[in-house]
Amino acid sequence: MKSRVLAAAVLICGAATLPFAAEERIDAGVNARIRDEGINRSQVMRTLHFLTDVYGPRLTGSPSLKAAGEWAVKTMEGWGMKNAHLEPWEFGHPGWTNDLAWGAITAPVKDTLVLEVVAWTPSTKGIVHGKAVNIVIPDQPTPEELAAYFDTVKSQVHGAIVLVGKSRFVPVNLSPPAKRTADEDVKARYDPNNPNAGQRGRGQRGGRGQQTPKPGAVPARELGSKIDQFLVEHGALVRVNDAGREHGQIIAFDNTTYDPGKAVPTVVVRNEDYGRIARILEDGTPVELEFNIVNRTYPEGRTAYNTIAEIPGSDKKDEVVMLGGHLDSWHSATGATDNAIGCSIMMEAARILLKLGVQPRRTIRVALWSGEEEGILGSQAYVKEHFGSFEAQKTEFGKLVGYLNIDTGTGQLRGASVFGPPAAAATLREIFAPFQDLGIYGAAPSSSRVVGGTDSTAFSNAGLPGIGFQQDPIEYNTHTHHTNLDTYERVIEEDVKKAAVIVASAIYHLSMRDDMLSRFAPGDMPPLPPARGTQ
Ligand SMILES: [Zn+2]
Image (spheres, rainbow, N blue to C red):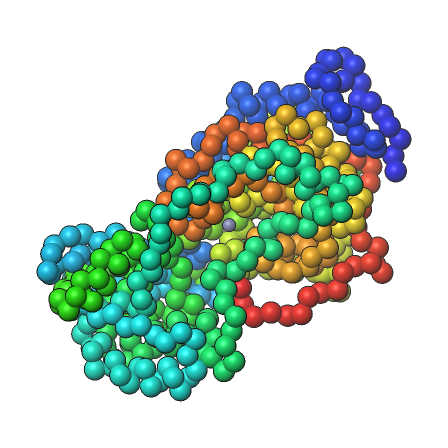
């Protein structure tokens, strides 16, 4: 480890007293200037505005995602970054956008429905009207049970608008979760002396609606496609799904075949509308619905792009500190908390360093990924292309200090999980130490090589130091993550300015230290997890 050197700047400017780390050289003078620029002259909300209001939503393969990347390239070049470019990778599916969608109940009452369209589904043929039919697939059917059920309803679906599934009852939540994590909980999580510390980061969240699988049942992932196929074959006009969430929140994902020919026009309506229609049908009263949906596909979207830009290093310029987040979003809103803000914070961190005119020793590289929502595809393609993996190393494998990622919304940064031995987390903990007043309390080591949750896991999976920040939840899981409510308004300016300050300091110090970040010794590298299916 390195000798303890107090930066001269500390003595000169007498910046705030800092809890000096045992080993890391912390430049208090640079930290003070980073705070000043990041808090008093921030550009982070301007960046967010462009990425959301002007270029959102940013579905992978869509023209707006490419335009967002081009804007980011131009903007980062304007700040003085070098080697800014869009880097292609093969998505292999067409781009898709929804250009217009409305739906209404026309009988026995008239009212507009609140809805979102499922990605990679087709348009309606103009305005379509039909009677509403509610089919309720048996729970976890075997292929035989499913076929038998389809037989009982196939005569009803032709020319109909088909509500798929029983309407979900969403009770009033009398004990909503806290929007911020208590300081004591964060401190305990990142206390190196706490045996239960750490090991809880992105990538270990539970999946959606996990159920113990029934032996012989059609896998959940296939069930949706089988229902789509049945509706196409029997001439349904529109498929309607229940959003199943409170207060009009809607999450609309994708037709997982990416082939609009394999589904009927499909919408997710808010739970309140779905429940209303289902209850009227249960009374025995016929319901008539009407829809008009215009979607488009873009063959050129088969090639997608990651957005890359650099601050070149000096004496160690062939070594790289990376930071980023995914620029792609789902399509129901403008993808502000997931994840335009993560991209905006990382761009802002680089901007702050450029503005200060500091010269990093190592190259600092911003990467804004695509294809994250479809399975962390863009970052995995990049890692494979540039670094390989521990098991199949390319030359650059040994040159990456680490990759810092933000992808959990607007909340203050509270700590980070660092793929590597405890010494790697200790380095980050020391770099973060001067920022406890901004809410960050440390870093914890991780040994998980599972791909999932977010892009830092593409690096960890390859055996590289993936660093994922943990944030205050704010409204991420309760309101904005993947929903139709994920907009600019949901971002807390104060929190994200602080985040950019912390990240700027972290990348600066990682770029300046004499050594790379500690990695697992070859004999200690955790084994790759067993291969899994798609995300
Ligand atoms: Zn995300």
